Length: 107
Image 1 (cartoon, rainbow, N blue to C red):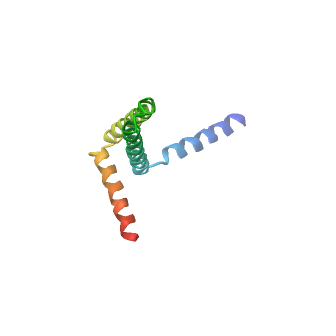
Image 2: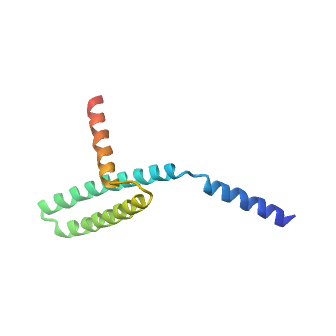
Image 3: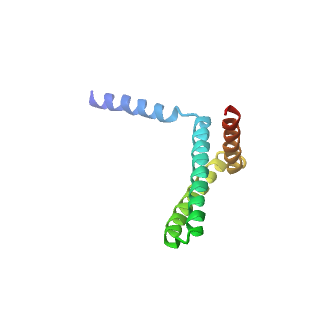
């Protein structure tokens, strides 16, 4: 009885894991890449601001965050390219720009 229950449970878990379509995974990855692009830009602005105010130590720490964001972006970009998406970073930047323009149009 226990073996039958464990087999049924294994089948349910397997079917749920396989249930995600590649399109859903691509959309999630693009969304993550878009978030990474925004974070990198914000962190880069912090670094520039710190350097203009002669806060070199703080700028170095913030630059490490920028490096981590770039690393995340490269990983996401490589995953998306392996899934068949062409120019994922460009697409993410384009979506960000479109959202900003849409916000300005609403105001």
